[in-house]
Image (tube, rainbow, N blue to C red):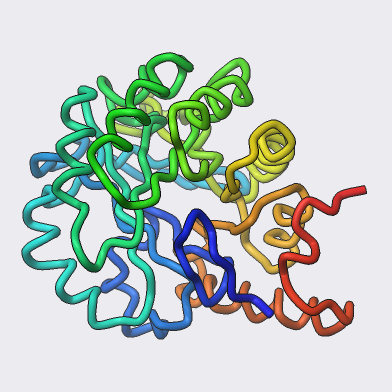
Length: 299
């Protein structure tokens, strides 16, 4: 009832553990059976290791949180050597999330990650908490298409392009990456935001601005998923403030073929499995045979 295939990636459920909030997945293995998850989109990878942003990186906000991690990660080679072998022990598709400062870096990342054990690539062109690099690609349709084409030319894996909400017209960008060969799009990444400490008169985050996620962004995310799903023919993976099965079902009705759960995992480590279970119960109550029966059925 819940098994889906999105862009050629076969998943037991349509619920993906979103990149960033689920680490590399191994951090959660004591709290949830990783085999129960539809797929794991691992923490964002870059060509070289990154230490991330200085200062405070997380701040709670009303109905959400701001993060300014700065893509801290061990680098793609370390991931391939030490982390991926451990993930391959589990029966769950691994989606590698990649970021780059140049088109050439994206291409090289794609080539390096086209290996057994990686089911697909999620191309981050929209990270709002890095001072240079990927933000520029995500806000311009031509640049977004350029990156998409470079990744596609250097991998045989499904390519999912993760879109930024920090644009005037997300549909234009979605159509541009689809035309460039994207096998799917995922949206939304975090909204750009900030918080201020009124006592010190300074920004709360060390990087001043960061990405807003959590329930606060859900109405915006839902609207954008609905818009994009109507405009493209490739599958859409919806995300942004999904905390419950009901939230996930809204995204599916809006046209999402699958969903990603991010901030919810920080509150409930079993969120990806619990949401899938709630979706299954919904189908049973509605006497529906498969989750695909509701995709895009908003009336």
